Amino acid sequence: MEYKKETRSVEGGWPMEHWQWKQESIALIAKTREAFKDHKLLGLKCPGCGLVYFPPKPYCKCLSYPDEWVEVKDTGTITTYTFTGAWAYEGIKEEEGPAGEPLIICGVNFDGSDTLTVCTLGDAQPEEVFVGMRVKLKWPEKIEGRLDDIAHVVPLKE
Ligand SMILES: [Zn+2]
Image (cartoon, rainbow, N blue to C red; front, side, top):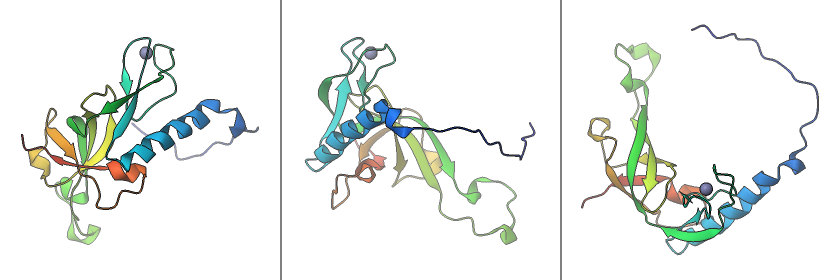
């Protein structure tokens, strides 16, 4: 497939104040981030279909509004993953730069939620990762109530 390299411009305004859903999302995320300080993951449960969103979302795919806060566990299951790093490509030439450390990026379905959270996986090599792998959130030493607090998981030793 060949991609066009040209860019396009579209005339007109893009009034951000009309994006009410975005403001609601920010407020919900703020409550969730605050709970990180107590080592808690808060998701929102939909009254229409029962899905639990973590991170929380102001609307559901069934068109209901999730409104019940529920606690989600800090253990979960990898449902998808990928790697980054030049090391992943066979035949890379030395002059193209250092291969660097592999970075494993995974989608984690934390226990008690029905949606994915994107995290990086540590303490594992790329060849060890698989869909269905059990992981545990690695809380940072100092929790600051930021999304970064839940950005890193490690294999769960059960
Ligand atoms: Zn729903």
